[in-house]
Image (cartoon, rainbow, N blue to C red; front, side, top):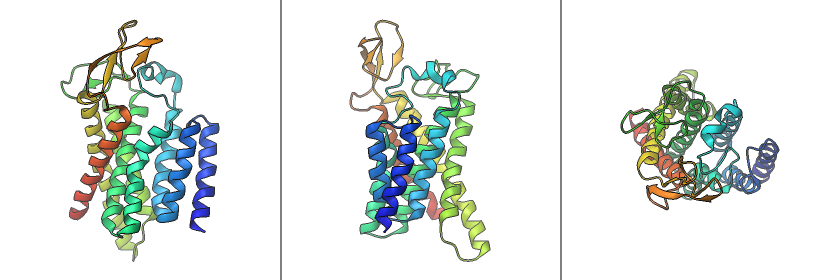
Length: 269
């Protein structure tokens, strides 16, 4: 029954996201597989945290999309997520879920919490930070950079990142199982702190990787620095980074770091 519930629920959400152009064909299929397996192997709590990330990030991607359109022209992919983006954002969470089914331990749960907090923080920072009236600053030097530059951060984006992680902690704590009311209150606060801290730190790691290791190109036609190897209809020139370190790879690696940070902090809280 759990597998059927997961399949039906994931299919409905993926279909709505595809209709709203938040997912491509491949992204919708990947989301159905991800959600079905997660619900079937784990519980509504794991599934609920995944849905909280996906629904909130999809809604934010539509927020003043016209205003963010220019900054997104240099991104490797648009706001309509494909299977690679779904895998980068939810793949490590799924592996934690599978590991928990094989070797049950709450350690996997906290790793999962940190992974989801990081991808949510990063997404909120990108979507809300893109609305900032001030120019982004390069995370390594503090110099002003053009909107959409990998490694560029804004005050609004950092605040959104903190809130994005706290939101995942809020959802995770609310879906957890608690004893009495006092334990619930203390546990919920701890979850919010865990989500906020690991999400923000993981998102900052994402920005650092974006500023250093992520592959970047320069369009020979318009002169813009972009994430994709083809721009303005012609091949762009690689100017820095590792060729295999795409934006999806950066997202996956930073989410792993965020998960490990959350796991470490869970021993303190």
